[in-house]
Image (cartoon, rainbow, N blue to C red):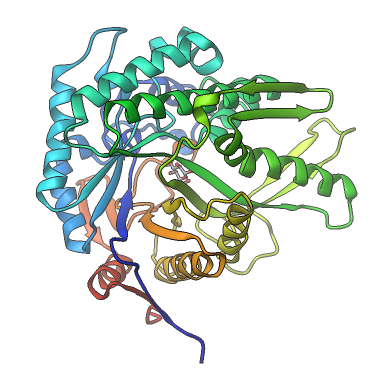
Length: 435
Ligand code: BGC
């Protein structure tokens, strides 16, 4: 019989992830402005009160304790902390300190992420990460956060998904500032990589015992048309940029984006070599890509293939086998000594029919794969603790272990919250009982 339970390694970080804008409510940033534009967000949803986590954090952290989490990742909302350039909000500083204190008092280690898709409007309007000045401004923010919170936080993520952010915001034009220029998008990726390397150095110099990384989104990319060579070639290029350019950068300090007819961009950031104490991986599944140079829409990304029997509520494929492939790739980059933390993994599943099995398959594949490839499995953080505002898809996707009733702001544990609690209690990932 196949093995059906897998012990968590000693000292494993088990918990959940959440981001400021998706949960806090009452934010005013680049996304708030974007949400007001017609046609940008499904059902014309606006983040608005979101989960009112800004007020209800204490109760939400009780939920974390109830599921047995020992780690929780959240993000610091720059636009709250520094609403105008150089003007810091004491109230926001105080509130985030309360959050970190509350987590610590419950025995939950906080992980603070310094940039999760949202930015102050003044920063974006001055060019944001499109230019060098933006990197400097971000580094000032990082440094100040270290001073304000560095006694309560010892694990940092400099940023969430730099490649996704840049491609969606500057390539596909789907998210703010909504530009459509692949060459600019890759320039922004490379600026963000540099920002990571330098932010790492700032935090490390402030306190060498900090654990610092970033959360990198990794996906399996497949050709849409199996017998169309251009799709294959395109997937190869996209995979190299999307999944592996960051690892190459962290190994060598070098970026080289070469896309024929679009850009040939090189950069060296010496301080970025080895700029990570662990690697944060966000994994959700697989996409299908097609490349048809003579058509109007040359590049197509399909996240909702028709051929599947089982899909998430957003139509995404469930592809736990991908975890093994990603780990295999990480091994090829020589990351054996770097602890790996799944910093996000989750599913939009309102009825919670699939979530426990989803967690089981991805989490166990993570533990099995790390063993198989001699990698160090250090943590698993589920996305997410609560249902929350899912960016351009608005509120309909339900990613929470706890359901949020947005009218009453009540939280209700789903079956999968009980399952997760079981994992924490038993200190092992086990096959959930169906039904
Ligand atoms: C992002 C989250 C998002 C999740 C689910 C991740 O790429 O970091 O903010 O909610 O995916 O789509």
